[in-house]
Image (cartoon, rainbow, N blue to C red; front, side, top):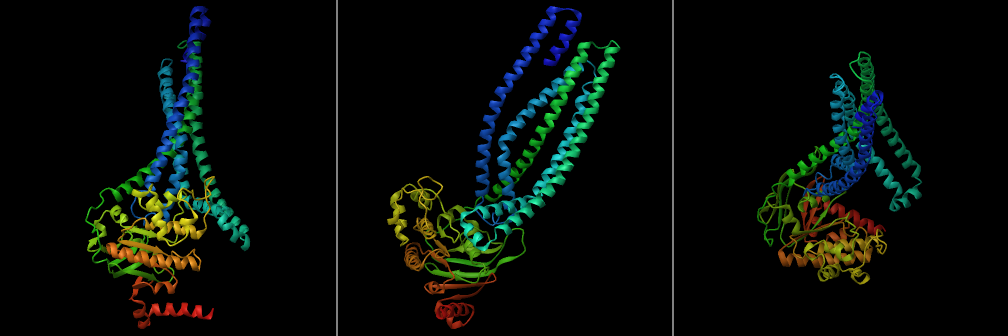
Length: 555
């Protein structure tokens, strides 16, 4: 409307028609004012919609990452790379929504411009078709840039990991003492140079394709202006039509240039959206039809692993190999073996966090493959070596171990007392944990571990209680308290529901307290039995016991 008003104003002025000229001045002024006002309100609307979309994508990312019941996919480095890309996509969502809406408005403007140009000459709208060339080349350029970005995701993940390592107060002590700061900086610099080199080459290809498209449109624009002058000289167009053509062609150039810029953002968003859709499809396939088989309220036969093997997705390395094992109901079981023997993997399989590659895990005859993971999780309690430091109030940090009682102080205090640690006397349930809060309480590693132990003990009727290296951060006195609490809780679980208690530790003095001992080596069960039986067998367990006993004797 602004361009149309300018062109007709020129014709009216040349013709000396003051009234008509004045009318077109008003039309142009109203159109220009409307454009500015509507642009302002559109910006506010776009911003609000973008904010809502950003919040929804953040929630969706949390659902996708935490949606699958099993962790075997989450432990895959390729999955970590995909999640890292999704985090970056989420950060761009707000801007992308605004640019996508602006792109829609630009498309409408471009179509209207082509319609008005057709009133001057039927061939002038072809300028809009030529304007598609930079769009297509821009899309190709953006696609190449996205491929390079995805290929570089492991490098960017390593760069961020090094940054976290160098800046983390926990690692600062060792970095300073070892003098490895320069080494870490050099490693980061090498990764940054590799990333910058790959992205620079991609940027050059991107710029060349974009420039080629803009050059094609520039030639077509010059031809349109020359053509409009030729029509005016031939008397087939007015001076106002020439002004209209120049103005609209200039606007079309600006619109297409802006459209290409906006389209680049939309293409990047489309790539991110495809990643979201692909991951959502995988997650839905993993959780769409959960099994609904029965799970006994009380264990009669215990837990049985029948020819269980496990490999991480995308790898050929067998972590557990044909494990055939029976853990009788009501027993406490210690799992021993060297690092990498498969102990943690076995615990995660039993807890239902991993699915066997082959074989079955049976609970009193019920195959866990036929039981809803949520139902089995409700009957499983665990404290892992890399336990979560849940920085909430003590009430909620412990209470989430059993969501029905998350706001009930009584069960939380009872769980804290069952740990055998003095933490219940040192802290009130209202105390906020962690330095992320202004009034937060900083806890020692042992205190955090006791909080995690109490969280596991919130479930008073587990069919499986897992303790993975629970004494790693404890001193001798605290370890003895934990061992005493472990024995008491194992006996309680056994008496109440026939539950099995699984204990992993490298301290052989604690292992001997278990009813049964399972020895893993290279992913296979090489021995199992009581402490006395395994010592008499003079096998791998006896060797481990002798090595540690000798170390204590020599010290």
